[in-house]
Length: 241
Image 1 (cartoon, rainbow, N blue to C red):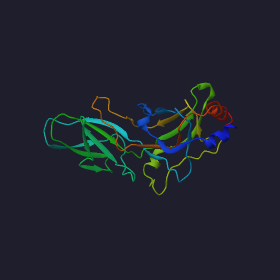
Image 2: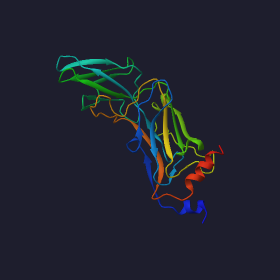
Image 3: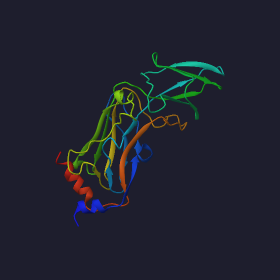
Image 4: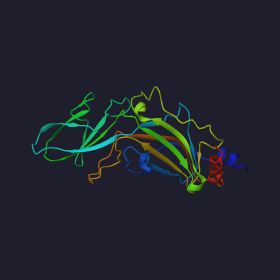
């Protein structure tokens, strides 16, 4: 039986590759940085086209400190623009390790937020959606770096974050090579970002906060097992690009 016949007969179910399944990392501002890596343990077929939307919202992270007056409402100036995203919360706040949720108010013109701390001298962890220009790229790669990698998506988050993604979805276009949409066992799906702001998947103070407004859902048909010969075939296929 040929590889393509085995792929057609393989059992798989629809799902998504998400940050919960990735090895995540902090980016370096202004430099192309890998912020997520997913390693496949079975055969995956990435799903393409408008009917399989790619959900994207990557928040910027900043932290502040409240003052020594309890119940004081304070205004914090964000270092980058904040935008009212149509698909997720524009800003999510934590006070130390406690989830605060939406700020008391958000000034989108001044790029400020208001937060009231019932305690004092708390760390304010802020995850917010920015419309600053930022390049996001998703690539698949073989474990052997010599065989290279292949792009599966690229986009400007400055535009994506403002777009009504339900009506105008981002999606994968996988027609560059015959096996463009396949990811074999032990191959990775890597997410790279070049942004002027910092992206964190948790804070660096050990408070255990997280960006609950983040979206990074890559649609895939997730296989139930590995398929012999697929990884080597996909690696060779990437060499044709």
